[in-house]
View 1 (cartoon, rainbow, N blue to C red):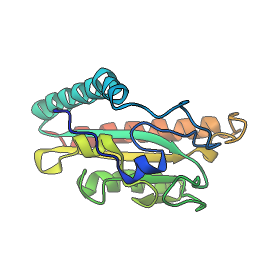
View 2 (view 1 turned 30 degrees about the vertical axis):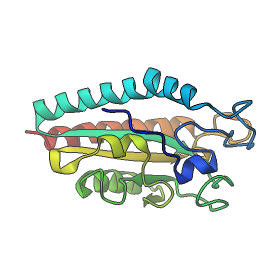
View 3 (view 1 turned 90 degrees about the vertical axis):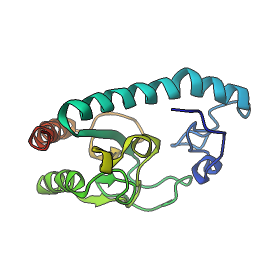
Length: 193
C-alpha cells in the first residue's frame, strides 16, 4: 500500500485519530509536545504500514484459498462516551458492530455477530458508536470477497473502568467471546468454497 499524504481527520482534531494525543480516561496529554511530520512518518513507516501490508497479504492468501476472507477487528469502549468522542456523555450498548455503514462487510457477516450476541442477552447495536476504524476500511472489500467488521465491547461488562480490576463476571464474558470466536470460525468454513 502506498503512503498517502498526511491529512488530519475530525478524529485527529479531537486528539483520538490514528495517533492519540490524549489519555481517553483523564484527558491528559500523551506527548510532551506535538508530533512532527517526520516523527509521524517514522511511526507510520516503521509500524503502521508494515502491519497493514502484512494483514493485506494474509487476507489475500485466505481469499485466494477459500474464495472469501473474514476479518474481525476487536476493540473495547468506555461504558459512557468520553468528552473527546462524537457521542460524548452517551451511555453505550454492550457491543457495537461497525461495518462502515455497510461498506466494509456483507450484511450476513454482520448479522451473524449481531444475532449471536443478542441471543446471549446483550444489548447490541450496529454503527451506533463506532462505524469502524482504519483497519476495516483499509481491508474490507465485500465485492472482492473480503468482509471486515469491527466489534467494540463495553469495558464495564468485564472490568471496573476506574480501578481496572476484573469484575466478577469476567470469566463469563471470556467464555461468551470464546463462543463467538467458535461461531465465527464455523460461519467462515460454511461460507467458503
